Length: 104
Image (cartoon, rainbow, N blue to C red; front, side):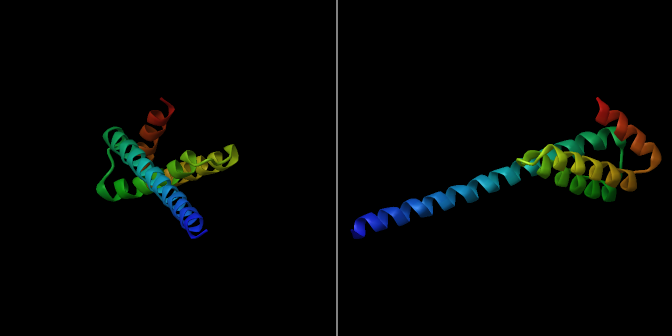
């Protein structure tokens, strides 16, 4: 009986460990994609280092929602939030370059 309980506890512990590994893996994917998109935008839009940090955080927030199993409404809300943030972060000229890049 003790062996069965021990085996069950071990199996339960392994399941909990797998969930945290999966969550960490998703976080790494979000960060990697946000960095990649920010760097691609930086080449086209040509923003400064302060803008780079703010753009990265905005893209990371959007990517997190997009990569989760969120509803279409949540993704659309996150996208409109991203657009609003980009409009406040970038100058008008930079925003136009961003829009052109985003449409491609």
